[in-house]
Image 1 (cartoon, rainbow, N blue to C red):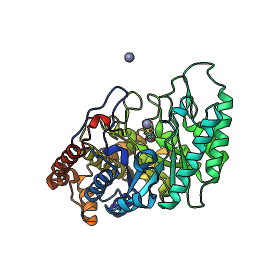
Image 2 (cartoon, rainbow, N blue to C red):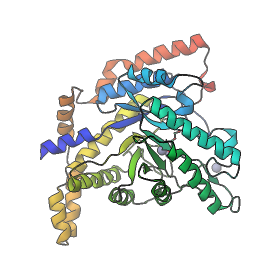
Image 3 (cartoon, rainbow, N blue to C red):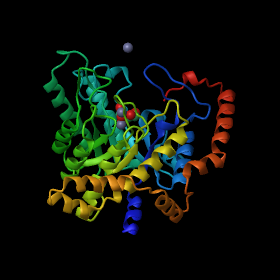
Image 4 (tube, rainbow, N blue to C red):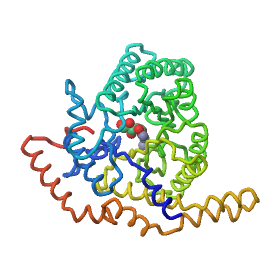
Length: 395
Ligand code: AOS
Ligand code: ZN
Ligand code: ZN
Ligand code: ZN
């Protein structure tokens, strides 16, 4: 059993977000870090370091507006990632920063906003083909702030039409993931506010559209593993954005608030794999942008937390669980989950890491590497030489 449990870790490849290595902040302000990435090459270097130290993060998610310069050959960006042993992962369009999107992108009543948004979505899809990335992840800031501001059903239909135009641009190997979020920045009505709305859109589009579950995008106490179970059963789960939440979309470190929730989500995935004989095709992506923690350490902490909870969930004795369930033994059924959750998997993780040639304690190995000191000195010097003030950098 230990072998299949350990090898289940091979199915957990975690994608790092390029934007998580740069200075980002809250709606109210930013606190800068001397070691933060200045440009895309820095972001890839940092992501490459996290991959080297953990051995399980071979791809990096890119943000089209922030990582690709106008007129630049996208292949150059892919080559810059390859230099650090990475491939470009999901392509993240930006349908929220342009002034044109004041009342939304795909949902806007303004045809100029909608056509610019669709054009951007299609461009992102074409870009994905060039850099050989198969995933386009759509997150929308769209919605309204005041009752009556716009026609909700009209917005829904505009969304359907725009998404369809983008879907049609996909190559057979590409897929489109549609993320949902209950609120923020729209506070009265968000166009794709929950998994059901995303599901409805994706289902209408076709088999290359799937739901993206950002763990932070749920109401207080919402049962996320049930959503995951339903989407798995319908073959509609496309990917995750990993983070944790206390109040709303806080982008806190995965498992920092409720590790048992993440365990229960992973247990659903292992359950699916036990039943079907294979792990579902899911993109596991981190969506965290740390304002206070050192960024690279925060990523390593996230990755190792995910692996730890994944392994614990793989330890769930599915046979015992099934027996308890069909015999109505509720106490034992829950105890099966608790037993796995409470197992110390440190030695197992070390064994898996050893087999991959990485250190048993990635965070300690990172701290010993001297990388943090190196980039802090290098980036401080480069900022000084180029006269870059951190106030003027965005994302
Ligand atoms: C926003 O709340 C979403 O979580 C997005 O997935 C993500 O943070 C964004 O696409 C990065 O720009
Ligand atoms: Zn206030
Ligand atoms: Zn997200
Ligand atoms: Zn979010």
